[in-house]
View 1: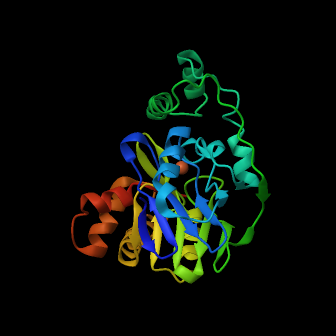
View 2: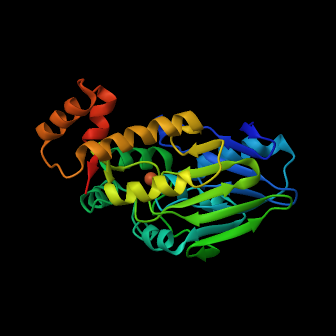
Length: 276
Ligand SMILES: [Fe+2]
């Protein structure tokens, strides 16, 4: 069974040890919509297995929140309309045709398509796959679109975000639920998140503009309002303190000046993660 959030909202828990993001589900009266296709056919099959006994209407739509492999490599297992933004479609092209032997994956690492950890994960998750074959999307969009599932409507919308060039969120107003994909995260380099200032501000503004009780972040699963407020407060602290400063010591000095205290480990993460 999936985790239940409301009568119409469910998700399969994320599994960070296997780089598996949470997969969301919105249940309409006539159709279901799934958020993200999983990191492999096996991941998608686990999801489908979990919903077998839930007596759901058919999954007619799957939305890819962005092009990253862990969100799309399971898509082809879904017999549904696969939806992505045009940006996601274009960016996903970098994967197609890559062979999964060691030399080819090492070559992909040199081209920054995968990092070292991702190569390990891709190998673990894609056993018996010799080549990454193109996943066909059925519906490409720019901006936003609305999908009526019968008795409930989903807003599928691109969002400017600090994680990647592409990003799609799914907002379900009736259930006050927002599926965020990876859009609240930084751009990961060497295991650490880096946030572009402008994109971060834009993402936070947009997320705050929706009336939401439940946020689904791909690698955390469900977050409530308090958790998002805590996270955004920390990000805002980072934005304020680092504004106009390039030097770490200046940043630390300003923090001490403003807060009359040393930064905690959490504070340091946010102070060291923002860039112009
Ligand atoms: Fe991602």
